Length: 507
Image: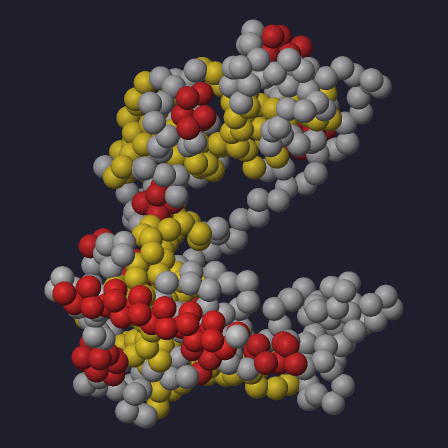
């Protein structure tokens, strides 16, 4: 009976699929044939293998490494095999505790393993010039002692890393060759969502594998990736595809396959490619100087939601809301203030907060550019001299606020918050002259506020009021009825952000 049902179901699916294809053919809409395209562009795609010398010591801080083979890259086709099937030492990343067992060394050497070993990983790339320049991902060649490039005609070359940019995950390689087949470059801005795209690479080491899909979305912003408007596709991308090209149906490269979203380590229908125009801008600088120079103005920003737009009197949710301004930085010198909403930069419209870092970063340091912002219900034009992003990583995790001592049984205010004044020590540590600290969050009001947050200002209908004391803040709240929405400027650690309270409640 089960077999009959399964056969019937399969027959129905086949009939429906065939019917759909026949209907498409009848309407003159044929499914794409990728064979000619692959034959034409495939020779310009290369396989990249790297070798790295690693020490046989296990790191408890790196859960994505195989303890017996430290330093093994996730792109290595053997990574998943070792992770699943090779026993892990006690206290390793797959143990219940997730760290070393009590009394064990923090970094033990694996018994029977040599002090050093060679770790190999695989990736993809493509030739952009006949004289041997190749683009790939920075993470493919990161920390590599040796990089080898293999062409489709089986020739192999030692490659030199001209430069790599971690912020966009782009690396430029050079091999000593001439007359190489090279790719043609397309215009990512002309891509349409739903358009067919093709990926070629070496997933799990299977060289010159071809997969196809469509453009799922454009301009996708990913966490910690503020300089790349990713192209999202559903083309099958797996470890080893990294650095390979994404082609349109004209055979032009429109992106570099860089990341996947996965809960298994493999393809789940969500792949992300760096637009080729971004990559080419990066490679131009890498070829010239070996590094990438980016602009900065020294602001911390957040997205403008509908609630925030209403609070600041802005007609629609757009632009980048300035949370804080670096003292003495380019924005501070230009007169930009916390609470401003930047709507244009250098003539380019800022529709979302994620647009601003990309636009500013693409601006040459030292340039004087105009920007437009929304402040207290009016539009204002300023001129800013763009600075340069340093290579140092900025940490946004500040010291914890010193514990605040409050009187027992202090009553909560209208928002259900128990507040106290900042102590002298807190003011000095946080470099603040005003604000009140949240000691406790009570009541049923659902907010993003937490104990330890410092409330700096209250915004209502575009007017921002600095908070000088608990008494002043609580009196301000009494002016609003329970259905009123307000916005608070809140300091958490070293980060400031605006938080909207939908309805101030009755406590």
